[in-house]
Image (cartoon, rainbow, N blue to C red; front, side):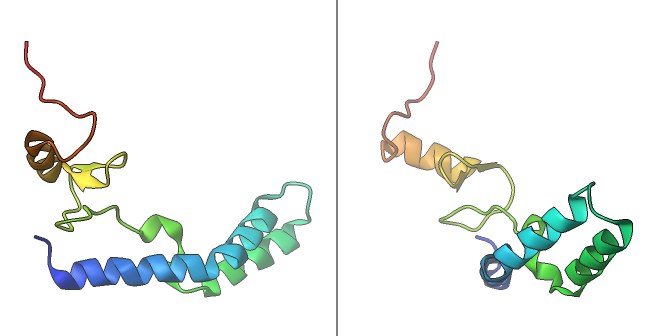
Length: 101
């Protein structure tokens, strides 16, 4: 199980990303627009820098839903590899069977 503080910190980041998503997307579109003047694009970049650092979507870490483990994460299931194997062996994940050949 991951440290509770790490899990809570990641949840706080997710909330900030949602809060600033519209503003971040608008500034990003302005900054990336090649048809605009260079100064307008620079101003948009400076405004992006004024946003909280944790409002950037790339700072959110994918974590296992049950244990909070950050490594070996499967997006399709929202679980880490260890939990995926454990729940798969118990038959708790529909359509997932243990491979044998």
